[in-house]
Image (tube, rainbow, N blue to C red; front, side, top):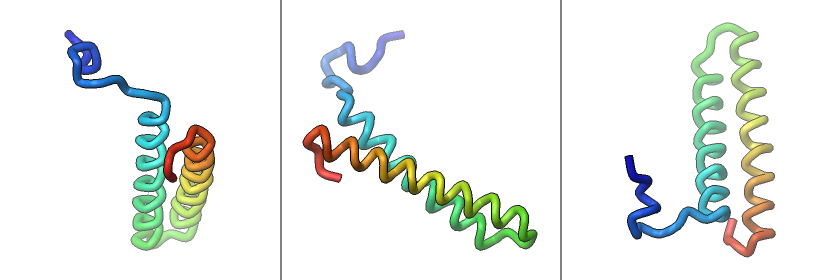
Amino acid sequence: MTDRYEVGQGELTDLDMLYDYKKDSTYAATCYTTMATEAHHDFVRDVFIKLAASSLMSEEKAADLVAQMGGIS
């Protein structure tokens, strides 16, 4: 199997990976928040809220790294 980056499609840079991670962290936080609004049990709701907060902290750290590398966060 050939990696698509080996056949002239461009290279995946560290900055590209950070952008992708930042996007995924944002989506995760959004999904966890949505799940928290649908949860009927307080314990489950609290778990989803903690997961959302953790995802947002991770997104913030990725955004800081993007900015340090000269990208636009």
